[in-house]
Image (cartoon, rainbow, N blue to C red; front, side):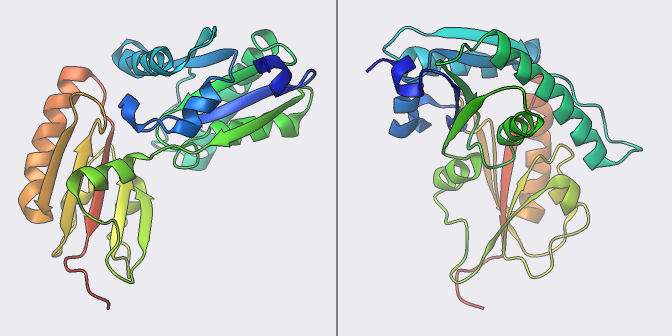
Length: 265
């Protein structure tokens, strides 16, 4: 059965495929199967500084796909700074801009009966907006398509595995948050906290006896890892972040912060 017959003879089909945090070995067998159903892949371009992200996506395609396919590169609209404004309004404006780009891609590049795929860094359900944008398109109408979501290994999962540490302590929960929210203080009652989108390294100013497991470019050849007591490693992480950001022009990092011990409270 060819991809067009499998995906349906009338509707467009969109696959939202989680590809893990960078290394091709993080790509799941389910993702490989989905990639081999696609006729074309939408490859986001985020400027020269982040060309490595597009390159890794292409390398994953070359490694795992054994059928003809086409790549469609597209520019991702920039999101304006939320300084002095409402963060949700800023995100809503950005989503509206991305929605228009996706509508053009699905209308002009993806023919009815074809499968198109977005290769999402990490997992599509964790701090990614692809699903939200597709739902906006469906709600707006005028474009008939179905979509599937294929789970991927997230950066926090890979980070914990690389540090050989469970995310949670026994009987305790895990809280996922952002640097923006962490600026309000370490969450009351929290035991293990995963911090993402922390451009200002907010956690370095937190007081308390806490263990930190940090990683930058997790899964990529130049990944950096640091672990230890927050008070002892915050300065080292800050120096590494400054060095690698200066060298590469961009930074993706994730932090797991845990209260010490692994007993029940």
